[in-house]
Length: 172
Image (cartoon, rainbow, N blue to C red; front, side, top):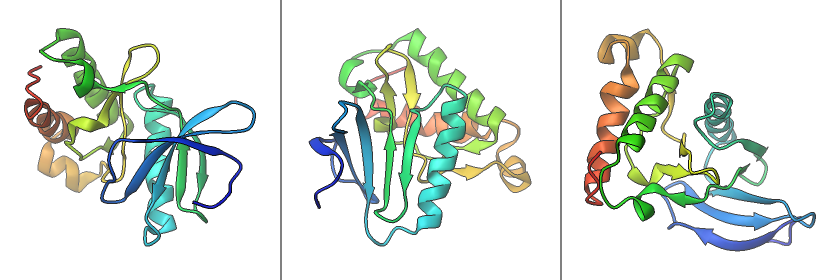
């Protein structure tokens, strides 16, 4: 990476298909999670992902987007505390209820998250469940509603996430 107005503290998670996420710190002490996309990711797709995440953050179910840098292919966002798969060893009704709430909120605001990777479920500093990675998200339109009825995230995303959690031996 080039010299920037921030310092990379550590890589968060593994390299993904679209890029990698780092914890970064700015000279004023502010920390952020920075999603660094691969060079071939289109600026339009980065903007769309950030817009979906902003809408979800406004609904209090995703990390806040702090800044979008399409020139350098980055999204800076509120850092999360921990992935749920790293702390939850068995089922929890609280997280099941929280997950359902997130799926219902996504349906309410018209976003199909569409990614069942269990690593997309994280806890913030207040131990509140949040969903990340809106790279596969799409607007809930008539076509989505026709296929998945009135609750596409309950019908699709939640089932994929529950299946993904089972890989980590977590049943909610």
